[in-house]
Amino acid sequence: PTMRPEGMPPMLLLGVGNVNRRDDGIGPALVTRLEADLPPFWRSAIERGDDVARLLATWEGAEGVLAIDAAVSDAPAGTFALHAADEGWSEARSRDPSSHGFGLREAVALSLALDTLPPTFLAASVVGVDFGHGAGLSPALAGRLDALAEELAGAMAGLAPTHEESRRCTKPR
Image (cartoon, rainbow, N blue to C red; front, top):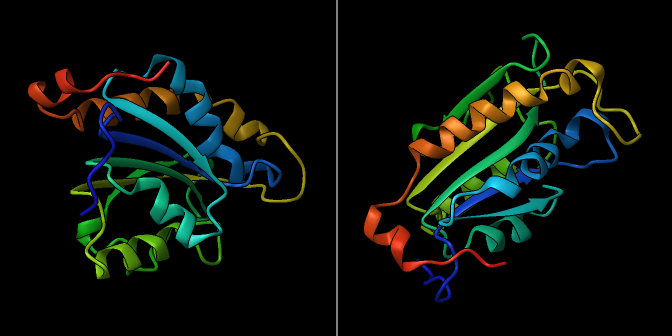
């Protein structure tokens, strides 16, 4: 595993998705909503999700990652689920796959194979309904943005590093 630079927060909130493909932008929208209130041991990033090498580079050196991505499923729009990478999520084609043909799942699988996946990695999926061209979330997801942000904040609280680790890092301003 790669060492993270001194002072870089160990935990990463990663929004994955294309903001110009409607509900595919839910990951970036949620990161934008939460990033102003991140605890000092968290940092945030937004990636389109279509470049596996960039995804691996984004979480390089992190001790924990919470990645948010849109999903395609028969479940109702806005359905939220957490998946642990070490529970086979990256290999399985579940009922709520990513909206990308090649993206987060494949990056996680590759990172596992290369033994470079951060020690803690959770993927949050949010079911979308409109992946057409254009900016802005569908009304179904836009109406759930606050509730989804609360669910993510709860997941982040469960991924907090040790007290000693959180004292050693500073939040960049």
